[in-house]
Image (tube, rainbow, N blue to C red; front, side):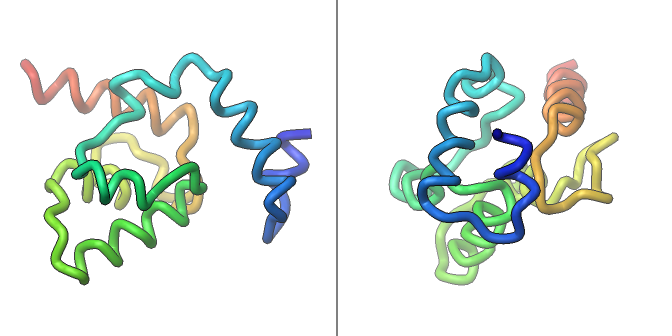
Length: 108
């Protein structure tokens, strides 16, 4: 059911809810590899949107003068080692793992 929703070009609110429910159940949701920094209000403006919608919102926030840390911009631009830039509309498990490696390398 989730795969069907993800394959749609546009999604109804009911279809988005199917995705959100599955996402909330995924253990990686609250892992450090799936996090980046934003102010509370800017983060709230991203809500439960899909990755490409969040990226568009991040760009809008920057245009409107919000502070978006470089790392957050890099995540949404997939500007870190081994990010899957062939698929800019989605945040995949491969991106998640590559981001985790990137974070670990920054801490060394």
